Length: 412
Image 1 (cartoon, helix red, strand yellow):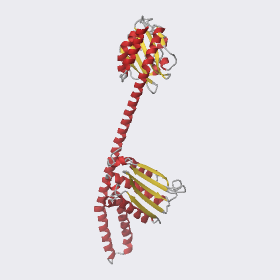
Image 2 (spheres, rainbow, N blue to C red):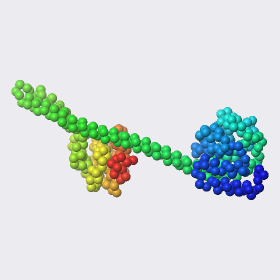
Image 3 (cartoon, rainbow, N blue to C red):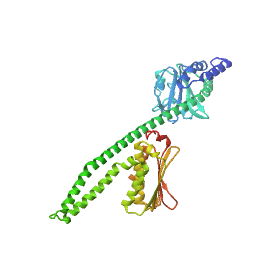
Image 4 (cartoon, rainbow, N blue to C red):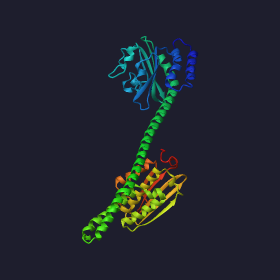
């Protein structure tokens, strides 16, 4: 072994093992062990290439001469001059002169550093972990005919020492990259969610402004106009028959405007709290539908919903409104139950009906269901719709986890 005594070679192997301890990245490992490797296998260029986890690309880490193999990062395995070794098709590569050896030169091969750095003699052995090739150890010399099979055997021992350490570093790097990608994805998602939540808050503010404008201006004007028509109707030269359609149309318009105002500005929610707003909506919706329905509201939250950020409580109220509307309009239910619960900091709202169920009822349009889901996502709540019983009925459930409550809807 290059005229070294076996005990001396063994000492170098031990030194390589010792130098690996505490090295946490590929570059530092190569720098730490290059000199010891040179005592066993003299070289002008040393590199270790590592196959990435996807097995389509690899990276190279060099000692001594710097080449484009180390600068091109990462590179396709299919373009590597030693691809047959990395693919496990051969157990080693040994050449007296890589300049003229066809196994290093093929269509698309990235082999110009061989010529640029005058690398003639070359040897390559795989880095294996549990029989799987994770990379390769390569030594090159400016001289031709420099390496022998004895050097291949020495290189295999060194590769066996390096492989487990490189495998651990690769796994740690992959975990770090995955954590970074996940953190970036979460940050993007959180940014989008916060942006959407701010937009929702702005929309709610605008809805309230519109509601107040409608109440203070348009509805007041229509009311005055309606009273003038009433006075005109009492005059003898104006027939009630002529004014009746106009008067009736104004009454309908005012009724519709009051509904728009109520939808745009949930004043009952703001003035009297969540449970009272839901109760008010139940009574009004059932009355206006003309359906014969019984309902009950069970509030076990002790006011927990009213302590939430206003944008969160409004989103929960809109989801509850939509669920109640669907039960009344489409489910052909005879009863509706709304349950408000708070346990261990989490808030849950269940809207339960005994109607036809998910498979048979003419349920909400895709837009209505998606609106509920979207509102739930924007406040980091869990939304679920499921059968109430085996024979029918539906439960619409929205749950706000405890971890998001204290953040007022701004937590992920």
